[in-house]
Amino acid sequence: MHWNELLFTFLLSLVPAILALGALASARQPSGRAWRTARAATLGGLLLSASLLALGLSQVLPAVTGWWQTTPLQLIMLLLANFIAFVVVRYSATYLQGEPRQPRFVALAQAVFAAVSVAVLSDHLLVFLAAWLGIGLAMHQLLMFYPDRPRAALAAHKKFLFARGAELCALGAFLLLYLHHDSARISDIIGAYAAPVEALSAGEQAAACLLALAALIKCAQLPLHGWLIQVVEAPTPVSAALHGGVINLGGYLLLLFSPLLLQSTPAQALILVVAGVGSVLAALVMMTRISIKVRLAWSTSAQMGLMLVEIALGLVELALLHLLAHSCYKAYAFLSSGEAVQQDLLRRQAPGRRPTPAQWLAAGVISVALVAGLAATVRVVSDSSAFEVFSPWVLLALALTALLAERRGPLASGAGAGFLGLAALVVLAYFGLKSLFAVLLPPVEHTAPLWADLWMSALFVLLFAGYCLQRHGLHHRWVQTLNLYCYAGFYLDEWVTRNTLRLWPHQLPARIKAKRLHATTGEGSP
Image (spheres, rainbow, N blue to C red):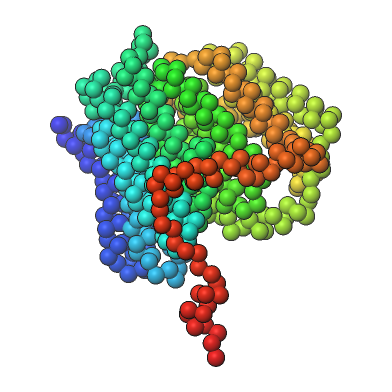
């Protein structure tokens, strides 16, 4: 191995090593020193990750060095993971003041992101799987930070079982790929699918389907979503780390193996059906929730489903953009959830008004014109294939329609021109960022089949119709009935929980009653 390859391997290994050493040191220190150690470790990992990404984009780093992969996908994910780790640790130092087990928390948080760093950089199937297992085990301990909370214990139990199921699916897929390619190197396996092959073997088809199933489970897709909603019982920084970083690894798995996935029609169909329907239902359920953290949890399930759909449609650059934006937004949303009361009061002071049919029609015409105008411009000035898949543009046009039609809603009265400019900016930003990420990733020789495009377009129209009914049609009795089913989550989690506990029982902690706790502690006694 050449000296520069040794240096790059050492620098890449240093990122998870810093976090792992920080976790070991923090676990043995008092609270104050533990937090200082964690801040220094996460800052060091963040700065080193940013430097490695700069080296990778300048093509100084080779695509594979030692046991690590260093393509832009891996380096971007590494920077994202370390950024979320730095933010979560800084926030937790204040949030957990007074907690008796702070060193344990900060050590586990660093251990989670050390394992994430190994997973996103790994070029070996077994190392990737071992890191994935380490992430799940460390996150399980964080979810059980308050072990006396029944809902937290139930959510952690379900997640533990589902995560092991996902890892077994990944293990089966990796074994099939190893037997077919006689190599455990991820780069070698992916390189074999860089160009379309004539036909996948039965083993390769099975491996693609197992990878799709593992990603669906890891991304908490319906009906295995209940644990994601219930883990809000854990401390807020745990929710931020989970929703902002860990849950995205299912999407990363499919991005990593997208050259194989996009040549397997059964795997694509599995994702488009399960994740497509799940994202629509989760989005509709989210609108019925009042608790900000529960709304954010349902939003994560919906967003993860949409991201998996984008990968199955071949829009890998859009999926990576979606993953980055969702991670940063969701971490921020959870860490700022304490401001929900003030935001709700402000919203109540400016009640919205129902758009008229004429306003809906005008908004639809303007939205379609904006998207069509951009399409015509792009086709004239470039040979971009951005519009070969039209279902994402259908979703964008529907979203702009709702935005423009409700411009007279809360805090937006009389701002029609401003909202029109914002809509145009959204369209341009969407295409610009999508084109930027397309440059960073290798080209994908895949065109989504017509049935997939039509299927997703129909689901997006259904989502738009459900949104309009929930927002403006609750005076109809049948819409109220539908809303009740949405509020209940269509009873999917109850069915899954009942069968999960039947197959694998788990003793949950008894709920602590406030009066009993008051009497036990002797507080208030004369």
